[in-house]
View (cartoon, rainbow, N blue to C red):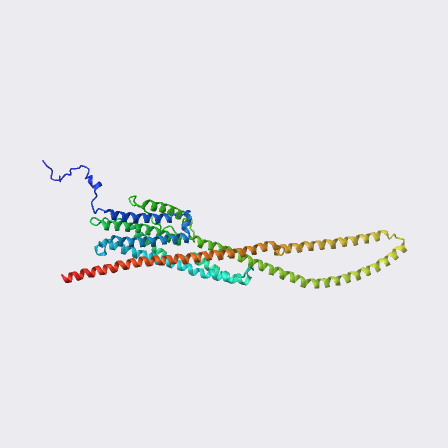
Length: 451
């Protein structure tokens, strides 16, 4: 007796094993297999080029420029792949079109945010260039007036360098959507469509990851980093997973420290700016101390003549008093002689008193010399060697800042140009797809009218 819920039983108890050998769906011809293999080999090669020798190089503008070049190359290659497949847009499934258009518009938004942040950093370089122009005195140490003039602009640049464009925060949603929509769409009845979907999956995975790295480096935060693993069935999966592991680990370690300037070229300029700011303040303080010391020395020179004159008057008075005292001593000696008193002891006492006065004068002179030495040490007048060393350090810091600022300027210009070129590639591909869709829809409408 058969049970009502029993249906048709398969001959094979564990499923049809021929599905493992002959999978359902369109079968790829040797030509399509070769085209797909060539595309995926090129993708793997591009990813291997992006793997830096040192993981910390990811934080440089030069690596970021190489990454954007890689994206431009990949989008050019997929355009060539679509042409080589000879798959007209009229044969595209609507889902394929939606995937391409949605990902491209998100990518354009990310490019705009990156360009905005690079432009902001480039504008900040105007302040750095102004500071270097003000401090340019050849091989001479800048004057106090030059240092004070440059200090305000230097402080303003350091404050602006710690800011971040709010557009970078808006990239988080776009990156999450790109990674969230990443999937390999199944294609049943089109071999060419299957090749196209595999190519689109690869380019979306690489684009999402690289863009997340660029945003993370420029924002100084590891939040935008995209986390996912590519299945091993893709020819480029090993190169991608290796690159993802190296870069994600390094950025998570570096950015967890709370760096304000993640880009190395920018951080080098910031270090020079802080050092220059400190040295400038020290130079101004030394100049103020030197001015104060000169003022004190000048006041001493003015007071000394008056003191000398007064001392001269005191010496005359003392001489007059001594003469009067001598006269009195003569009278007393005469009187004592008359009375028969010995004058030897009195002369000895007078001699001892004179010697004591000389010792007191010498002690006062010695103390005055020590006081002058202490005054020189307090005002820094005697430390000429350390002052010269600090001046040389100031000149060296200005030179280092000039070189670092030039490297940052060139790096920002080059990267901005690469991002602009990539934006145009994505925009051109999007416009071409939309144009073909209009032509295809127009052809369908005309055919319906004729029928």
